[in-house]
Image 1 (cartoon, rainbow, N blue to C red):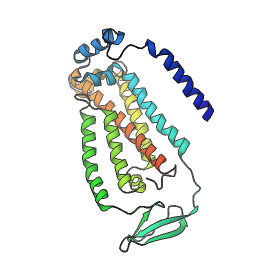
Image 2 (image 1 turned 90 degrees about the vertical axis):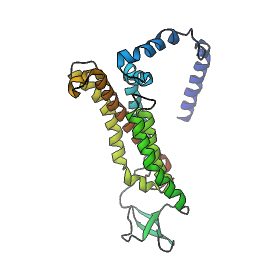
Image 3 (image 1 turned 30 degrees about the vertical axis):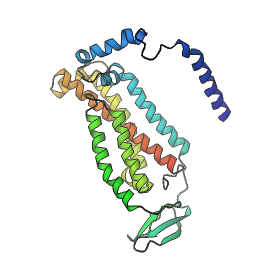
Image 4 (image 1 turned 120 degrees about the vertical axis):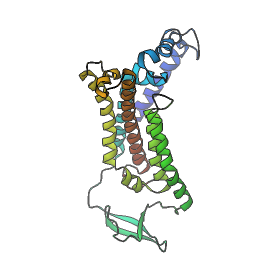
Length: 277
């Protein structure tokens, strides 16, 4: 597989180098996109899509199909990492777990069945590659997490009016969970967003995007024609299109956030999703 992958990369590189001379120069005003596509998008965004931010109108309206399949690719990438990296272990296996006695700081090793925890609140499970806890780093990271998440929601909600959207907001939401994992441990992230919940959220985001397009057909519009929701929302067409794009952005954010968190859990824990970075 490594040799096959190396051959594919070399072949793609040779083809790219052979055709690179045919590409238009960066910023060339006489290229085909600059003469036809870009002016139509820039000038027609407001009257055709009723979206002030023409970057969003391109992603969520003119190229709505492409963005939907990009979201699907993100979901499939996360599922591929899951099936490749996830290490499935037999239940009841006996392993060594490490716990720290909070009042004294003494670390104990316990030979116990998998996922068995002490009942006392005085003990805290730590990773095998344990590093001393830094209260300053942990406190500051946990202090930053709510602000990151609020800003992520702002980016998602205002993506159709200003720069932002589901991809950016989803990355920010994922970063907040990853920050918790870096400052605390992986088990804390798992308690906040379980592996099953993350996979379901990623799939729900794709279904929400595609379902938004299918619902437009029910109301007499084309697939992903957000203006068809005017009768559903009881609003004008511009407001209906804004609401449709917002729903789509939420679906994208769910998929991106859940997929990135899942990949982080798998890579940092060597596929066990128990302890890691």
